[in-house]
Amino acid sequence: MRYLILGIVILSFASIIYGFNIKSEDEIRGNKFIGAGTVGLFLVAMPLFLIKESRGKKMKDYMLNQENIKKMQENEARNKRKP
Image (cartoon, rainbow, N blue to C red; front, side, top):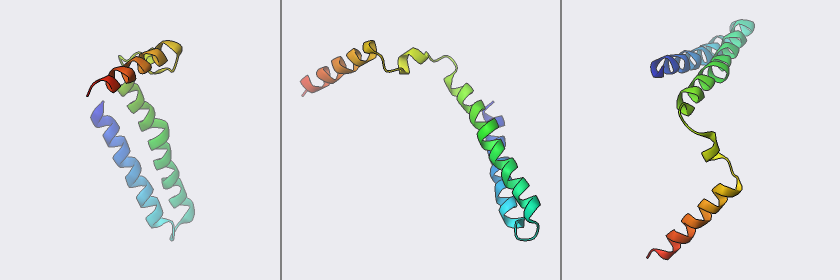
């Protein structure tokens, strides 16, 4: 999965760079390559990366609710007491 995401990112950046290089000769084709690279980055690679990295994690731990605020305050108070 890691190499698939890396491959998509590299191909997307290559497509964007190629699109900017040929844009002076063929503007429509250059815009298509730039758009395809952008779609590859933001609509394919980023969601795959987020799915891969968030697998097995509890979203409750990252939400700011009353319980987590109390934990943060307790940790801060403990850290202040330590010299």
